[in-house]
Length: 491
Image (cartoon, rainbow, N blue to C red):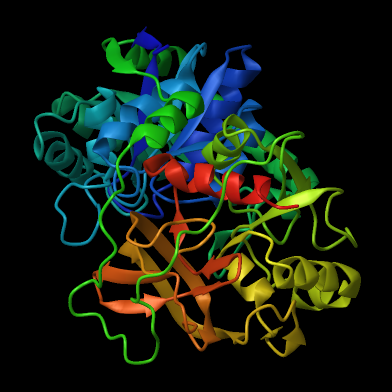
């Protein structure tokens, strides 16, 4: 049964002219402030970011969800939003980078502006006003007029220096006909520490993070007109779409034809491996009886995940159990599948290495052919070593921190059959790391990248699929179904 919604949930997109303007401060503060009023607030983040949604979840008590038009396609933005916002009083979407910044060389694709248009949502522009006065009107006018389909509902001024400074800014924006919905003064930053990939995740500092979110709520409550912001949110027209659901997505995936026939992506260098040879079908028929147990790595070292992944695994019939590789010395009882997502294993390499019983258990599970899906941090954990510290030794590869940030969207095709993806499956993903692993690909790589560069990457061996590439399974639910079927087939 397909469920359709005519959503008239009030909604705001919090955007900015550039990164560093204060989007996260305002968005998280608004979520917390409105939640304190007793509203059910649905938190969302444009783009592939994993860390900000953790703070959003803390502010609202609901899963932080990503809306990524590159990885999932523009057609899924509204359905995924409707899935998360169902039953809520307000939805707040934090933008990514500058309002009109998107996937490199792809126009508006994956930009905050595109998400706002797909959601028919008014935009509130957060402007760092610390070094300007009347010029703020020209800046805001440019952003308001650049794309007539993007509706700017008002401005929140950040880092305002004094009463006089505020008066000048307000006068300029009044001339431009742009409402000022809030003014935040220059003040010591709320304690949200950062490191090499952004903010420190909530799971690593939960008590301090709660304090920080409370402080953000107080800061926004004092400086912003919440009633006026809610009034702007209510101007969003009804959104007609079919809400995404994991069960429906899997049903459609089950009946879908193969994405493409197995083939070699043109131009990729295969000289180092036999990656593009046709291979037999992976996986198997679902096992009868108890639900397969999928163990998902969590805790401070493995914090990167999308809520939809767990929902898809559960809808496919799996029992999902979280474990912490820093503390747990064994995999959950009855584990038949293992998911190790992204995070910061480099920060916890000594502690992960010291947990020898779990490293041995993971290695034994993989050696026995158990299905393992590992992304980024999971890839590093499965290697021989990380910054010289012994890891699980499943892969004949060593990883280390580097000075170079690898960041960007990727278009990929599976070049080896695995428990996660059939040879030829196409997905879009995202890389985000400051580590390197050598070699970068095994004899049977996981992916062939077709854009923006052509190379093979990752490892497929026995039941293991390990790669740097972060993917969003809502874009291709067949991977979740295939993985659960592989887990169900375990004896």
